[in-house]
Amino acid sequence: MKKLIPLWDRVLVKGMDKVSGIIIPDQDRFAMGRGVVTACGSGARRVKVGDEVYFTNPRNAALDLLSFEGEDLIALQEESIVALVRDELAQEVKEHLNLVDRLLV
Image 1: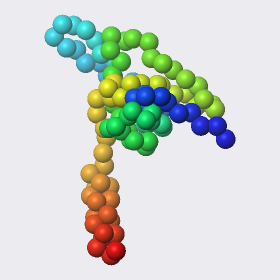
Image 2 (image 1 turned 45 degrees about the vertical axis):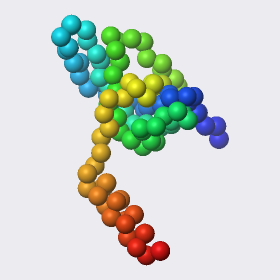
Image 3 (image 1 turned 180 degrees about the horizontal axis):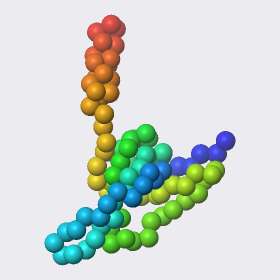
């Protein structure tokens, strides 16, 4: 089985849908997208595989689109990711389990 590995700070995202446009004072338009991270390059520090993210596409520039083993992916630089979606309850449970594991050792 082959694996697609992005280089440097690139992140591969499986797009979910186009979210919205944000108008900023100088009237430039930033397209906003949403997706799930499927792979991270060695330079990516803030996201991990499985994270749901919102990303920008400044001035509707062309995105690096890839099709790999039947899956359509977007290659982004990590700095294009503007937000992570976190489930607070899941995070609290994870932190609690980590604490329990440390107490049992």
